[in-house]
Amino acid sequence: MTKQPTLLIADDDRLVLATLAKHLRQAGYQVLEAGNGEEALTLCGEHQPDLALLDIRMPGLDGLETAAELQKTTGTPFMVISAYGNPEYVERSIELGAMGYLIKPLDPAQIVPAVEAALNKAVELRQLQETAQQLQTALDGNRTTSIAVGLLMERCHLDRMAAFEKLRRHARSERRKLTEVAEEMVRCAERLYEVVRSKT
Image (tube, rainbow, N blue to C red; front, side):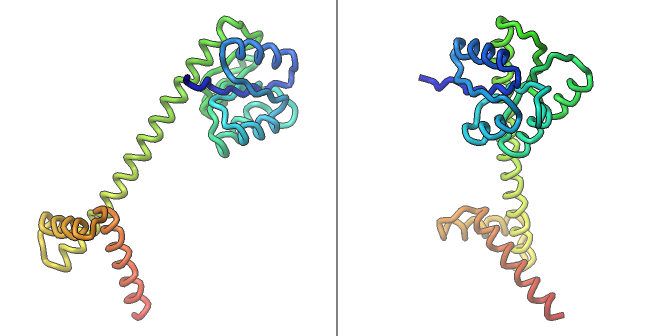
């Protein structure tokens, strides 16, 4: 069976907290409850929930301060709960990356669809971030390989294709990745450069 998403709800109003938690548990979610921002941060660090629902007005750290701290630490996706549709709150929530903004009093019939939409949005965002990281890693690897090819072109007086093929054959003969050999070559060249520069 697929593990049900874990939600964290942070609200200093115990009645709202209990009612919302009960409704979401009945909908099949695992729910963590926090009465303030500090407690929410602790629970997010310990349990890594899939989504946090944060009330804006709480003693100590308010919901937006908690959200900002979450982005720095656990990266937990979040929604904002508020009795106010204040444009300033909405704008700040968007700036922090909120997956949604719920206005109190909460309509039970609308909570689950809003949470599902936020969870799906969070998954899509995570996938985009992972793809971007993979692309960056590939670009970094290609950049290092290009530098290594350039070094071989200069040292061995080869054209680009011949230098690349020489690098590829060397990597294959040592049963190593091309990027690994390229990185080693670039590091050696940098060390040699540092030695030469220190003696001039």
